[in-house]
Image (cartoon, rainbow, N blue to C red; front, side, top):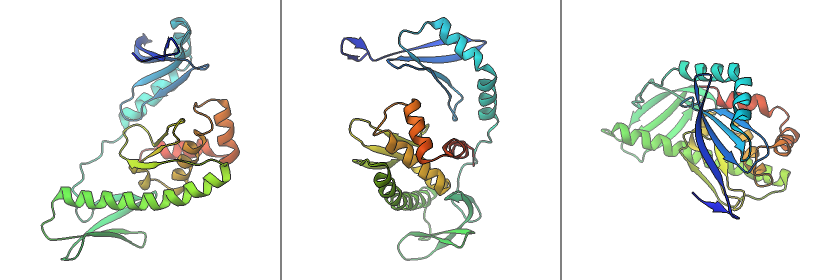
Length: 241
């Protein structure tokens, strides 16, 4: 386990509360934080290093109804049908649903939209499902890169910060992440399927982590200052498409 200034950076354990397995991560923080993973319904608590287990249990019990509701919601999410990347499939772009139209031709592979109805995928005859998927993913990546450049530039100037390096990658449990020390920011490729105002919320969220590392009251106050409706936007972002 890594150490810092002679003390443990964090401790991780699992406790059972009202029949629920709760992962407890003790850190050198001041407040308790509770979350339920939107992908696998794992219950996680971040707690101050010196807080007693009994205090953590009482906190979890006070949130039991909310936790069970979130766990149930995750369990009820419809599992996505495996993609085949063929004409007629529904794909999402900027929060809207589009029908995929695959057109075979002899030119370079490309993707474009047709109105608000179709995403057109141009590929060579015989292109495999994996090849079609890769072309579409690279299009999403290029579109997100362009949009992020615009939004980051806008909000860097507004907030008065400067991101160092930004990357786009597939992320399982986060929409973005920011290294408070290096000012490097990662964005989830899946963001391009969400509405633009949701993407903008993630940009502001991560840029603010350059100023404040933790999700504390100062951080929330800054979010509210720049995006008064950020909580509703966050809920919309995390809602299953």
